[in-house]
Length: 323
Image (tube, rainbow, N blue to C red; front, side, top):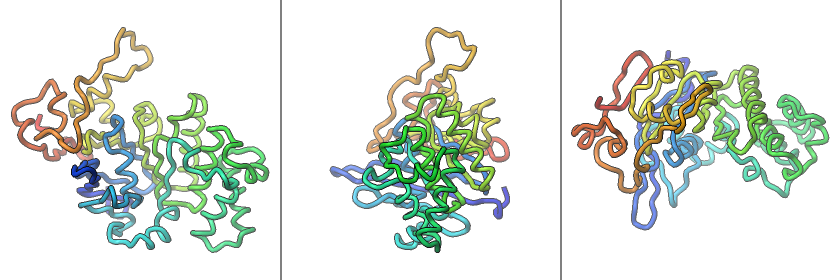
């Protein structure tokens, strides 16, 4: 990818949490890039650091208890870690980078109407009057296929179903035409039919607005539908990164392979799913060497002693593994 085509570059990012005399290395030195208009999936087990990575990009890690202790977040040519909180709030968060979460009911204020919250976001980042902002809010609700948008804008969050509320959240976060849209498990709390509608909506809005998407999920099927590249995360580290086609067809890291084998596909007649033995390590006391070695049936002595370095298997396909 040419440098001019790169929107986001994360280099050596470390985000730690400090509590009870311990240091939890939630994100422990990750690297990945997102191109303009590109969709990248970030996958892994619960607790592996996916959401913390996204919150770090948004500069939403606050001390205490958390802190970004090292690394760079280069967005549109500028290192966001050099920005003041005020500048991030005014110029970046909500304006150029937006984020939605898996449970929309916890993201919207229950005591304010949908329209009030959307108008506030629009006016914060765009020089529009209250009337113009309300008009745009209605237009955005119509874009995400919410019927009778001029009425819905006056509803409270509890008056909408989960699927409709997630659509309203997407409309609000896209109302300022962001360059990067971060979706953290956007379909987990929804039933299967609504999940498909939300994914289709995200794909359509991406094509319309030419924005990049960072999709955080544990659902490999969603990644296959929506993403061009995928980063596989384990215990605070990215262990494999590359095109969806290449990694889905030929996973190299033992953890990536184990993750795929633990998913039931159509036509799969096996009686029991494969599982990954052992437990995710305690990130306040991670094992030496490769963090996956206690659960890896291919581990060698070098895996127990040295942290693996990045190896480029082919152009754009990276793996962190001694094997």
